Amino acid sequence: DLKPENILLCDNSYQTFTYNRKIPSSSTTISRQATQRRVLLDTEIRLIDFGSATFQDEYHSSVVSTRHYRAPEIILGLGWSYPCDIWSIGCILVEFFTGDALVQTHDNLEHLAMMEAVVGSRIDSHRVQAVNKMSTRSGGNAASKSVF
Image (cartoon, rainbow, N blue to C red; front, side):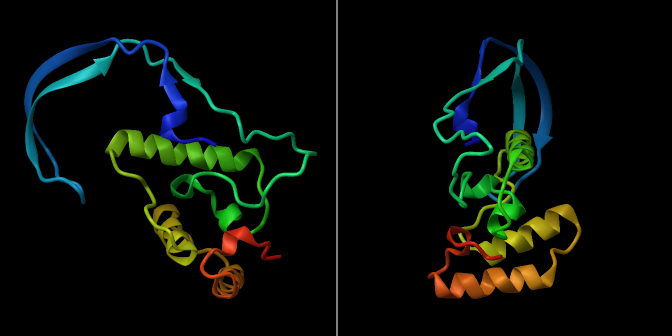
C-alpha cells in the first residue's frame, strides 16, 4: 500500500537556506513570508510495509490502496496490477510537492470527477454509470464490488 507513511528517508540530514520570498496560498493555508527552507542532502528513500503485497496469480481483494492514492481502474472495478502503484506514486509526489493530497474525497463518483479534472480527459460514461449503480446498491462503496 503506497502512501507517504510507508516511505522513509535513509538519511534525514538537511541544509538550511535563508531567503525572502512569499509562499502562495493553497486551499488550506494563507500566504506567508518564508525566510528559510530545508533541503535534504540525500534523497534516497526506502519503501516499507509490504503487508498487502501479493503475487499476480494469488487471490487479492478488489479494493486496494489508500483512497487518496487509488487508481481509476480500482474505483471502476476493473481489477488492478502494478500500473496502479505508478498512479499512487504520482499522487504521492504531487502531495510531497504541494503539501496537499491530489484527490481528497470519500465518494467514488466525486473521486472519478477529480481524476478527470487532473488528467484532462473523460472516463467512459458507461463505466461511471456502472459505478454509480453499484454505489447506490452497496451504500456508497462501489469499489467493494466488481462492476464488470
